[in-house]
Image 1: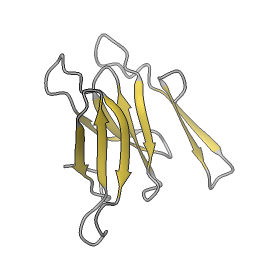
Image 2: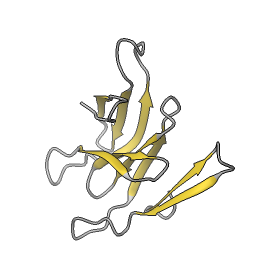
Image 3: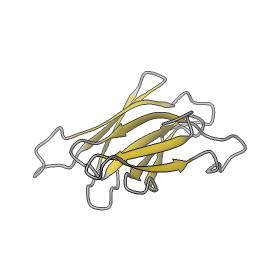
Image 4: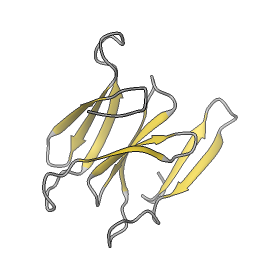
Length: 124
């Protein structure tokens, strides 16, 4: 992330080819959103996860294009302090039993977990 609104992905297998996406124009509210945290998954090299300040959401993005594949709101109420501050996508259980687990540390001290499906990159 650069300046909180520019996403940059460097392809390690393609001579550090860069993909850029300016997220400052993605505003669906009256306030522009900024990136609060990022995670590039080691075991799922095609995807990344982005946390957002203003909306209190996370987005799963395709690292080749930086386009969102799935989004999930984390706030329970409009004035909630549920802002994602750190994200990790890890394989806690054997892959034959379960997909990776998405762990999200929130500003209010809570940790939210989601099970992720590698096919379709959906979370539940």
